[in-house]
Amino acid sequence: MKAASALLLLIPLITQGMFQVETICSVRRETPCYRTLGHTVHLQLTTSTSGYALNLDHNDQRIFRFRKSQVTFLKDSVKDRWQFSPENGTLRIGPAERNDSGLYKAESFDQSTGKSIGGSTVQLTIEAPVDKPVLTQHCSDWIRAVNCSSNGDSPQYIWSLNGRPLSEADADLRADNQTLRLSRNVTGELTCSVSNHVSSNKNSVLLHPCHDTQTVATTHRTDSVTNTTTPSRSVADVIIVDVEEHWWIYYVIIPVSLGLLISLAVTICVCRKKKTHRTVNGTNMWSSNQTEDN
Image (cartoon, rainbow, N blue to C red; front, top):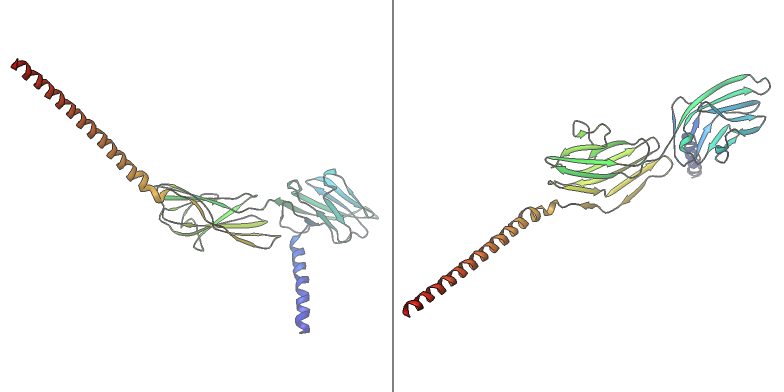
């Protein structure tokens, strides 16, 4: 029981440690660092400041220096958002803005001699997270075109049908994967998954055989995940604007009805004309007979 309790106490600490490691960008890392727009960024400049001085350049511009336990920011626009902690050598940026993206170079110096000890760089990119994709579809001839659009920076699109990923062999995919073309008779649940370096989201729509009409659909299921929030799920009603189910009203009943009305009108006019003609002829004959009798 004690062992189980100890394990339960350690789980939050382990999780917190993993979260911190995952969210800290270090100038010692070789790979680029991506963080979410509007969130807090922790930039590890050095592991120790004891006996050292420190310079930080952003896109080849000196923006920060640390001397004798004194922190100096050389750019007014960052003073309210940036904080440096000498205890752990971490620079806190928050909330992150787009112009915080760029190349950061940190260089350490021996405080007594002024000799450079070495420097490291890291590429930081701030991205806006992707939002819920919007799916629209259009049927023409024998092709159904489906488009997936989402706001956010550098979105990447992946399609799947009934849970199976679609490739160029299965469908006609555009270069950006944002639009695909399928046979108009394809049915099932089509899912568009969109992601970038800091977030992911997806939406689905049910496909039905379509006619030569345009269908605009908003998906019925949403799953979204970002690197700083827990996955969330929501269910909404399917909204489909579709006139294809009533195509026979527009292409059959209405033309036939108009044809019948025109035929009826012509028939009435002809009948009235014949009746008038007979009446006139009858009157003329009666007048002739009267004249002969006289």
